[in-house]
Length: 279
Image (cartoon, rainbow, N blue to C red; front, side, top):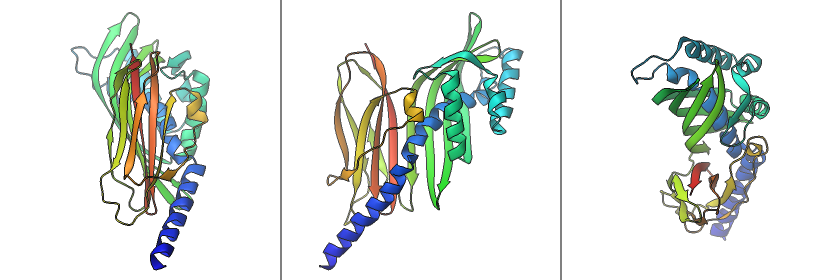
């Protein structure tokens, strides 16, 4: 009877904790943050490029003003440095970028990021930079703290002191909450061929002992609507100590997000990976 009550209590704790986490859509804010910050972090990266020539002065000036506006959370000033025709891999536009930034800033009071330039070049009238960005952030909501850890690789296109296009090459996100969120090992390829089968495994690396583990997984096409209207995940018990999903890539070249969440009574871990599907 004592063991039964203990298990019942664990279920209740995990359910209430996960319900709070999902209802507040914390697991999905990471996606909004990734895209938004990938555009804001450009300013620190291009000036560090080591490819033979310094970037043009007008680019440095634009980057400096973007940095100032971002630090001040001055959205109107920041958007002056984004082309009205701005696009990115996921269909984000000048307008939807504004909505995503407003949502991000209202939910993440603390953000830290560092960016490294892998390469940059002049292509016609555009300056193109390949960057890798490391993002750290925290969110506090009703006494609970969520911690963000992301790595994003992207290619940025500037013209006439405005960012006109962004291509997201890869992204890895982990969002945790609680005193002892599950430690996980994630196995997934960054790129696959159309129609190819591949594995998305999210494995808890610590013994479960008598703790109940819940989880969920979702595969979805990347898209700008997901930044504003994220998908909710449905939890179920994970007796095997993790998530093991066999995925079949679509027949058309595209980009997909694979997201998983693992929930225990003492913490939650959510991971997201981008998979590029090519011919």
